Length: 207
Image (cartoon, rainbow, N blue to C red):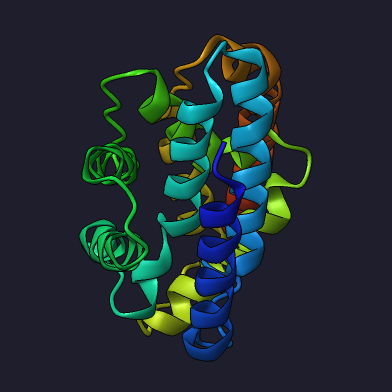
């Protein structure tokens, strides 16, 4: 594994995000990048990939959301441009750059990975759906969207959006299905209870 290019890429992404990431980005920030990389390494260790493949996965995760500093919709393509420009400057092999680009593009919602590397990156990107702190992470995303797009979600609106998204999502790798999938189903049940309580509260206040 080429730790030199991984370290250089990590420093570059961290520097760019620290300088240009808006303070209201509570979700799409460097902390998110770190957690995605950690999840990707964990999944890769259980999915029988080579060190060379793991290198591509890690680099894709480092760059996958950097495009958010320029725009939200279509940020994946912008992230690819940042990755290609930086890695080309570092004389990184073109065939590997193309694999990284494919992994980044696979994270576009709805996720449509075509191979194991893309599956691992996709599962790492949304591993938090099957985590214990999914509510806190979801609230960070809600805050970011409300400020970025000048929107306001009612509690019912946000819960409905979150439930619909979580139900439409599926993990791809055996590791993620086994380790995040069960918790994700429990999280959906918790969200549905919250929705029911919020709905009853709203009706009571209106009557």
